[in-house]
Every structure is written in C-alpha cells, then in structure tokens.
Amino acid sequence: MSETQKYRTLCCREQWLGGIFDKIECRGDALGLADGAYAGAVCLPPVDSGEAGFAWGRLRLLAEVPAEASVRVYARASDQPGWPEREALWGRPLDPDTLERLFGPPAAQTDLLLQKTGRWLWVALELTAGGPEKPRVDGLSLWMAGDHMVDYLPAIYRGQDFTWRYLSIFNTLFQGVEEELDGLPRQLDPASAGDSMVEFLARWLCMEPEQGEEHLRERLGGILEEYETMYTVEGVRRTAARLTGQEPFIIEHFAVDPNDPACRNPALYRRLYGEDPYRFFLLLPQGTFEKQQDMERFIERMGQLTPAETEMELVLLKPCIQLDWHTYLGINSRIGDYIPAAIDDSVTIHYDTTIGGAYE
Image (cartoon, rainbow, N blue to C red; front, side):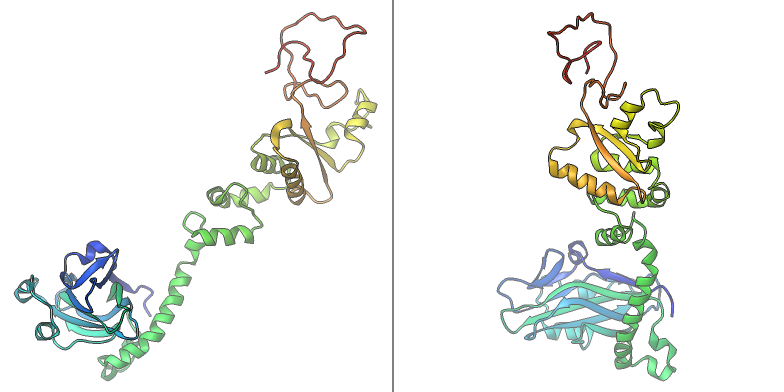
C-alpha cells in the first residue's frame, strides 16, 4: 500500500462558518444543536479537490452520537464551482425533504463511501436528538489521495459500499501502524518529541529533570557527548554545576599526595586530603545549599554519577582565610592591598578575620 494517505479535514470554527446553518451553531470548534433545538442541519462550504472528475471516496465524521441521537450525511459533487440551488437556501429552513431533493438520499453512517464524481463537493449534515443528550460533530475528514485495500480486489468488488467500509476497519489499523512507524524518528528526536516521550527518553537514558522539562529537552540533544565525558573530571564538574548552579573546584589525589617527594608539608596534606588514592574533593561555596536535605540529596546524586570505586568528599568553602584548613588563593581568598597589622597575645585570628585587604 502507498505510504501516504492524504485527507482533508474540517475541524475548526473558521472552516465551519462559511456554511448555511439552521438550528445548528458552532460550539468552540465543534458543531452542535442550538439551545432548545432537537433537530437541525448545516450545508457546509464546497470543498475543492483541484481535479476535474475527481472520484470522492471515504468520508469520516469525528462525532459523538448518543444512542437516541443520529447524524445523517448528504453529499453532491460537480465540476462546476457554482450551485445556484445551494445559494437559494440562505435564510430558509433546511428540512429533510429539501436536503434530499437537492442532494439525494442521505447516509446514516459516520464512516461511508461517497461514490461521487466532480471537482467540487458539497456536504450537508442533519443532526437530531431524541433525548437530553445531543450529538456533536468535532470534524469531517475526506479522503483525497492514497490507495485502499479495496483497490487490490477484483473490479467487481471495488464499488461496493459495504466492502469499502468493511475493509476500512483493517485499512485504518494498518495505516495507523504505518504512521506510528513513519513517525518514530520524530519521536526519538528531542526537538520534536512530545512531553511524555521526552520523559520516557530521559528515563531510558537514566536522566532526571533536575531543572525542568525544557532543560531536559536541551540536555537530550547533547547526551551523547555528555555520556562520553560523564566519568571524567570535566564530566563530574559539569554534573555538579548542573545540580547546584555553582561552578565547582575539583582536587584529585595525585595533586595533593602527601607521599609525593615534592610535597612541602606532608603532615598538613595528610590531615586535609588523607592518603586514599581513590578519593577526590569537590569544593563549593558555603551558601550553595539552603537546607541540609538539599546537600544530602546532592551527595547521593553525585554518588550515582561519579566513577566506580571512587569516593567524593564535599568541602564547603567559607569566604575567608582559615589557617591550616581549606584556603585557596583566588577561590575563597584573595590578596589585596597591604594593611599593617600587629599580632600579639591579645589578638585572635579566626575565620572571620581578613588579612591583606577586604574580601568581596
């Protein structure tokens, strides 16, 4: 079967308004009976196929029809764009006798084979309600191009309405499967996938929407590059920055190994960094987390996103100099203009004491 099935669909208020209405009105983008009316009709604007002698095939109504209600469809086709008899209907009641005289016998199905020939198609709908629940028409779909299962049968069966409608059940199922398969690449593209599919892709790739769905959609676009460097120093730094909104500073063991012959203060380095070669330090500003629970969730999340057999130690840096503690020039401390100071037994240097100028 052809991969492309082309339909023309009327489904919005602007498309209905060119019709002739009698006790039917637009309710949003749908058609329904007017208040207090239990029967009504509408003659829709003509549909142009763009091809003389066009063979109109399937017409399908997207409608809700309660058990005590009905929708009847009238259709007429012609190669002439004008139809004076239709224009004469303006301001007149569209009763069943008038419609049948102009269009011919109606069809009481919501999915039917028109078997009309002509470039222009006129369609009229008659709605009736036998109780409080009234019918509603949300759309009208006209088959315009593409083959049908009935086209593969001998010619004697092709013009039969029952055969067309019966095979349309399977044709629709098969077409739906084809559409799903054809649309699969779009669903796997983060830029065009729906919100539910983006969430599915994120779970599939073990991602969490830490900063909302739109941020997740952006991350999915570059997830391959992110995965390639996820367990590197750059990847850990990028992950921490994404989770906290702060640019972290990472210290690896080889840079502060107290057993390195070049280490100038092994005792201090051993106290600050230890001797575990699989431990690294992640430094963040002190005010990064508002609550203790936020910090605990961050540590737990980072434990899932760091290399195997490694251990992360989080260090929150205070914006000051602390002697014999985590003080890093240019990160949480600065050297400014020289200010004379006298240090004696009556002076205590603590973490809130600034040496060498004000820190901003």
